[in-house]
Length: 290
Length: 256
Picture (spheres, each protein chain N blue to C red):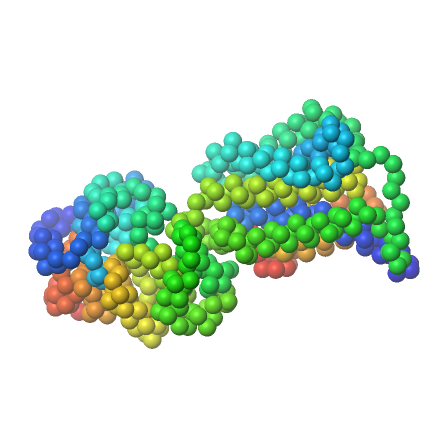
């Protein structure tokens, strides 16, 4: 197989898919690191974000790119609201109860999407977009924007966590929650801030999956396993690790069809997850021990 | 030790309080409480006045660290009062107590391992608004080792340097009362002496310090006042020198 064929049909789609996974995995790693539980409603929150953007596109007739920030705000408030109503209420209980409740939230979110938008497959825009040719690399504009947007969004988050007072407080809470409280950090505010950021990341990952493929009520749920695999592969609690993990899982899934039947593509994430848990449970960049 | 034995020990609280005429920073009176339903503290009385080092010593399980945690709101206080700077803070949440001028350095897990030394100190000043460079400079003057390695991750430091980061973090809020829970546990003699010297310097600079120490002899030698706790209540109290000279104290807690 010629090299350019590999790049165009396997590597580039893998990077695009990996960017979408990365956006989700960063959110999962934040919830894991700061709130210390596996958030199973993550995929369905992404679905909600994707459909919220669709709602804005159909009602106001605007470009999907205008709808994205609106979807981010909707998802951020949704995530904060869910936390206030459910997770915060359960915060004193064993973590497994919170994890199971997040599975319930996942089903509720999916039901909301199905009630409002129906069960059919939708798209943001009609028609086929042909890829452009850049020095032999064939790529669509929306794919370029997906990759750039992932790096910009994660870059902004990175800078926020490294440079600002509240970002440092989030890292402190992830590092040593007791000491963060002793330093006067209000854990309620950190929790709300975290959910706001997680909502924004979910909306972005759902939106980019929707714009590169189609919108389906199950779209987020099917992304859940690859996103978790990416977060654990990168090292739980490590934002940059989640990006690397997302890209690896995405590329592995897309290139796997060279060796195994396409139907088994989704199993790649599972295989990676198993392997990393066996070989290096703390992830590529040393993360928290689960 | 039975409760009867405690009852037989007359408390010399009043006499000690009279010896010190400084302004009281912390006054604990009859503090009872514990983590679960059982009271670990069975009525503890203590006073720290302005600009003094007070050491709590006693055998394992005497409630030394528990008494300190009670001040900081980390356990249920079921009786008695904890007055700091004229306000009863019993039952307050830690983040409110911090704002009231009390800072606490736990014995373990007292640094942010994945953050740099500089960021650890910044987190210490989390509640402060405005410029913190003066406090940073003060902490770096106290701990010159830290200034050199300010960008190093705190988790990569030696035990003694970690303890300095932990103390530095607590000093960033310019507290009036500093609580140190066994700051020298597991440190080499060289670092222990250094930590004790810094503690003395902080006192001389105007801070009040309450210290829980395993190294009772060394700590009592420079303490202004000491309390011996046993089975969750006061057993002895006096100046550091008095306690060192007391034969019963020496036999019971200082290893003869």
